[in-house]
Amino acid sequence: DIQVTQSPSSLSASVGDRVTITCRASPSITSSLNWYQHKPGTAPKLLIYDASRLQAGVPSRFSASGSGTDFTLTISSLQPEDFATYYCQQTYNPPHSFGQGTKLEIK
Amino acid sequence: QVQLVESGGDVVQSGRPLRLSCAASGFTFSNYGMYWVRQAPGKGLQWVAVISYDGRNKYYEDSVKGRFTISRDNSKNTLYLQLNSLRPDDTAVYYCARDRVGYVWGNGMDVWGRGTTVTVSS
Image (tube, rainbow over all chains, first blue to last red):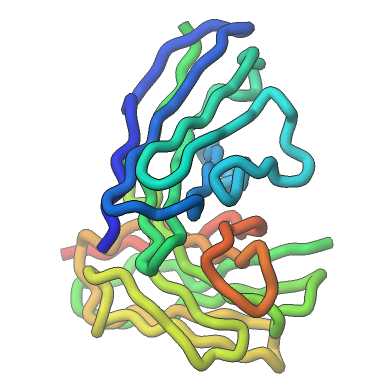
């Protein structure tokens, strides 16, 4: 099975900050990586698919890049509604494993 | 509007069975691969299973293989997850989700339900 490692596990930041979350896959997954945002008590939300493509309706402050084994999600200017947990997920081969999650908290 | 609504979650004893349902509306259910994902208390998201749009192909995460069965009834626009031989570590919120692209899987999950809670007591 493909292993997906996400870092950091938690992150403190302020409104307006730029933040980056990293995901590493082993072995290579080409561009088969997605990013989700999840807030407690709600359904997870797809932000990015195919490593860098913004899902419809997602603000442009979210961007992502990477291919092969190394991927990043960047939020250019944090807004209050962005404080949540973020997950990467590989969909190269089933099982379509998730990373461990990054909890983004207000500093 | 496009919607998924899970039901069937309950408190059950270890070893007992349970069936979860996910009712779809607002889209052509029979065109999409569907998933179950779970989140145990204090833990992250865990992918559980996928079923193809026509129900012919299925895949399971190793820890549920042989115990859980994913199925669908396209005439009823409903996805199911049969949970057998439940263990305390199956305690979680179970979400159903839709593949972003019709007729294939592995493209991200763009529509999610709000989840149903399964609690397994020992």
